[in-house]
Each structure stands twice: as structure tokens, then as C-alpha cells.
Image (cartoon, rainbow, N blue to C red; front, side, top):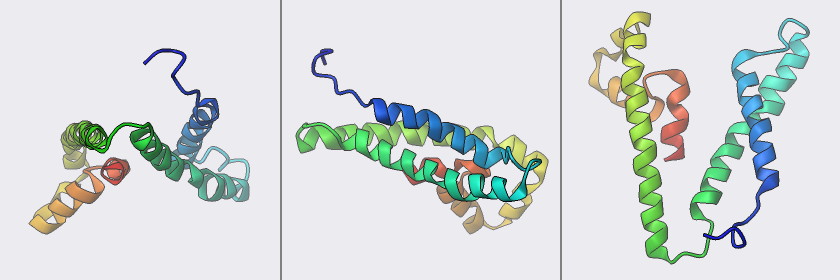
Length: 133
């Protein structure tokens, strides 16, 4: 792809930085000590646009372009495989943390273990990876 044919998505790039900061805010509650109300508005209302934004932009970039359907299928399968590998490695890496935290005892039943692995991951924030697949 030449530089002349490359599309410019400056607006998306700028908002990706903002959305990244909003995701950090969701997980850290930065205004909690200043004002519970402002922290709630930031982390539980405003910042909640970040995750859907990332899901939408992932889909947009995955399916954008004028390739034929065979190439799009190939591109989609590559995305799914890469994301699944990242998800699998992350799930395995978090197993020792789960063992230390005692959550593995909750997996006494195979259905609960399978649900956690397929839908949630082995740690709470890993839900995004299977959701993006």
C-alpha cells in the first residue's frame, strides 16, 4: 500500500487516546477522593463510551476496504486466530493469580470452568477478548 492510497483516520486515532484514558479511569476511579458524584459521572457514565468505541473501531478496520469476500474471510480468520492466541496466553498467565486468590476453588464444577474460560477469561478484565472475537 502506497502512502498516497493510505486513508487518514486522524479523528479515530485521537479518540483512541482519549478512550484509552477513559478505560484507565473506569478501572482507577481518579476523582473518588475529590467528589463521589463527579467520579460516578466520569467513570460510570461518560467513560462507558470507550469500550463500545473500541469494539466498533475493531470491526470497522477489520471489515473496511474494498477486498473481495474471500480476502475478507481470510482477514477475519487471521484476526480471530491472533485474538484467540492472545486470549489463550492471557488466560494461562492469570491461572497462578487465580490460584493465589482462591478463585480456582469456585471452578469445582466443569461447567463453571468452561463458562469462565469461554466467556470471561480467568481474570475479570479478559472478557473483552472473547467479546471482540
